[in-house]
Amino acid sequence: MEKDLIYRIALMMTPQIGPVIARALLSHCGSAEEVFNRSVKELSMIPGVGQIKAAAINKDVMELAEKEINYAIKHDIRILSYLCKDYPQRLKFFDTSPVILYTKGEISLNPRRTVGIIGTRKPTEFGKIMTEKIVADLKDYDVTIVSGLAFGIDGIAHRKSVESGVPTIGIMGSGMSHIYPSEHKDLYKKMVTKGGAVMTEFAHNIGPEKVNFPLRNRIIAAMSDALIVVESKDRGGSIITAEFANEYNKDVFAIPGKPGEEYSAGCNGLIKKHKAYLMESVKDIAYNMRWEENTKNKAVQTALFVELDEAERCVYDLLQQKKGATLDELCFDLSSTPSSISTLLLNMEFKGVVRSLPGKKYIIL
Image (cartoon, rainbow, N blue to C red; front, side):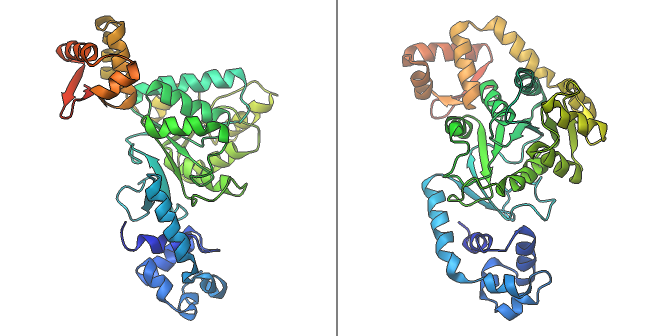
């Protein structure tokens, strides 16, 4: 942990200090540690700070910050400040973005392309099917799916991403010790272990308070190159996220619905107000974003179904899902013996499908 990180965490745990004020303090003082060394009088003279906010800054929160770091170390959570090289570059454009982020999972937070998928917590059967199809069709465009880990459209998007081997990032409205909704704990575990990640600006002991979700929504909007609203009422979190995306000059897409239907009102309203492009398929996104389909990968995938037998396909699918695995891991996950898996892997190497790495690890070419 870098020396100044604990002070940045403490600063963001200070009441009444948000990202904008924190950046002003850091800019004027040079470091977070120096912020805590300045007098109330000195801090209050910084534009936007004032007496009340300056008086709230004291070292009483240092103990809480230290506990947060210990919790992160124990639970394999990365803590990123906005000055870290791994901090999401898409968030750095906005002064309101978090100064501190807590993340879990191995994928990069700076992928090539990102698509946010959001919508109602109570989707219709059409909404469920459409969300799954969108995720499946986006696979050939080398994207990472971003959503809010909530019930409904969010959860469907994350779950289908995990099943399809599409990287996905979940933005939480609570701390890491409060997975919300609790029914998504298994999904959370799959995301952080199978090519995905979760991210939050809240300390681990912060629960899913109502005020947190608009804050979460601004991160979803900022992280998304394109944002898709699948189904939504005329008000609610999805519309708030779409408003943020428009404010951030992101491309917003909405699935049109039947007039008069409750969960079509939000999408239809965005389209009518020219706040979203009408979207019928992923090709509409590709056209507007000038994205080319990864036809090479698609051709390889098509060929695999001809070239690989059933057992080899199982190995291939597992390697794709895990982004590579050791011989021991493959034997355990497939409930097979080392000799049989080794034979399969050797045949797949001859076919140019997999490659062996040091440590008996295998990856897909």
